[in-house]
Image (cartoon, rainbow, N blue to C red):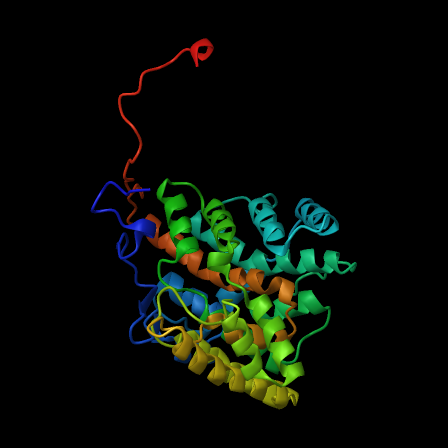
Length: 379
C-alpha cells in the first residue's frame, strides 16, 4: 500500500514525542543511561527498590528513605481472594503467564483502592511479583505462598515462586536483571503506558495496557527459546554446526539483533558478568563456557552471512542464562521482564502526568474519497 504522504514515519521511527529524564539510549555507541547512571553501575550496585526510587524522585534515597520506601512497597504486596480466584482459573485453563499477569494487573486494585497516581504506581510495582508467583504456584498444583514483608523485592519474588528463602547469589543475580531492564527509552510498552495516562486515565490501566503490549513477541522477545537453544547446543557440543544449520535454512538466531543497537547491547554485557558470577558460584561453569563460545561463533557467522546487518548480541541472550540459573521457570521469563519494567512504566506514567498533553498523532489516509452509497438491494 502506498503511504500517500512523504512525511509518513512508519512505527513512529525517529520521531521524538516526549522529554524524559528516566533513560537515554545511544544505539550507535551501545550506551544505556538509567536515571543518570551507566546501566552497568546501577545494575551491579542498586537494589531494585533503589532503582525505582531513583526513577520516581530523580535521586538516590537516604538510608531512612530507602527503609520507608521498602516498607511501603512490601505493605502493598498482598492480593485478595478475588484476584487469587482469577489467577487460579487462568492456571487451570492453561492460560499463558502474560495473560494471567494482564488479568491480575487489571484486578489488582479490587482490594486496594486508588488513592493517587503514585499510590497506584507503588501498588502495581509491589503486586506484579505476587500475581506472577501465585499464578505459577497454581500452575504447578501447589498453594500460593504469601508474600513476606521482611524480604527485599527480588528475594520475596523468588521466595513466593519457590516456597523457600533463596540464597544471596540468586537474589543478587535476579536483582541485577531487574535493575538492568527497568527502563529502556520510549519502547512500545512504555509508549503505551504514557499514551494511556495522557488521556487522564489511571496508572493501573496504563500498566495493564503495557502488559498487553509487552506480550507481543516483537517486543517481549524470546528468552525462553534462547534457553532451549543454549541447552541444545550444550548437549550437542557443536555450536558451529548449530549456527551453520540455522543460517543455511534461513532461520533466525535467537538472542541476536536489536531495533535500536547497531553494536552489542550494553545490557548483554551487564547480564553476562552477572551470569558468569552466578554460574561460577553455583559450580556450573561448563554450561556458561558453552554460552560464551556460542556467542563468539554466532556473531562471527552472522557478520559473514548477513554483512551490514549489525546483528550483535542482545539482552535476551544472557537473560535466558541468568534467569534460568537463579530459578525462574522459562515460562515466566517475559513476565519477569514485566516485573522489572513496571518500574519504568509507572515512572513514565507519572512523568507524563507532571506536564501532560494528550498524545494524539496523525495518520496518512490512503483510502478513496467521494464514494456514492448503493442501497443493499442494488449491490
